[in-house]
Length: 407
Image 1 (tube, one colour):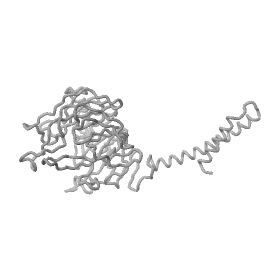
Image 2: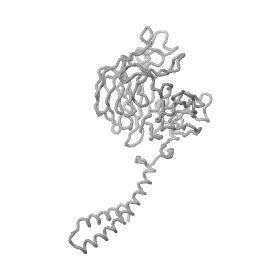
Image 3: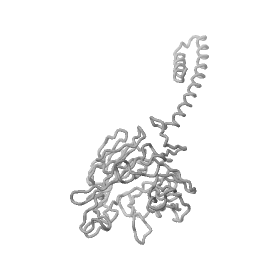
Image 4: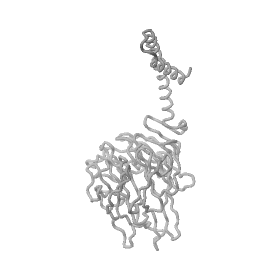
């Protein structure tokens, strides 16, 4: 007799007993005996069924198919060390790979070049990565990896869509009074910050005498931002935060995308600065209402890494190179540890980081930039590969860029 049949018969017998006559003493005695027998059988059967379920869960973990041979699972780590372009879900600790993007430069008729991103997003039903609609110029996946905020191109866009990642359909549009070119979720997933621009910050502008040498030229046109409540779709007041220091032609050299980001606990906003000669601070800080302010005490030494402050506030991820990266005390800025990775992307928990690192066997010469997604631990030299060394998806020339969020 199989498990399903055993459970079904035991439960049917118990239900029949409970519906029997209550006035007959002999009947009650016999019913009591049958109940005891039914409980024993049901308990044994359910225990067997539970064991089967646990076994299946350990193999499947939400997927319809068993994991491929390239998968590696240890506790809360789901690694794909055999996949150079992720096909199946990758995760470590509280952080999952929600998707990845691939960029390319598309020539325009007027001589400009437009940076265009293609997105491959996790389908939470199949737990596989699928190519998103080409019309999405910007995608930000919410914590929980069920919904994404999307913008249609060419940027800036006048509405934000809420995309259901299971169906690939937009469930709601939120109309804006100002065109925006970037959106980001707060750490708790309750709101978004949408950065407004007059022109597309991803357009490389053809400037006479500067088309092939020097820094690319972009429109330095950020105007401000709005906060959006995710549940209601309510859009807050527009906050003026103009982009500083454009040149006399209104152009911005180098990194022109100057989006606003939430800090670690979502109580302040900042703009990342990538090159500040003679300065140690890499972030301009703002209150949620748009007023310039100082950095939170625990983030005043924050540099360029996306990971930033650890969840418990004990560590601060810093810049790195092929040989490793510093971990600092957020209160003093002093180095307290070093991890074997070059780009710190997100904290998996309060001691582990999801990062990019080159394969130690190929960390020299022209292969020094061939990085893979890894998991590293503060206080350890061990590196756990989460993917193989990144390659370009089929049909693309550039390697993929990870999109990480809380799962």
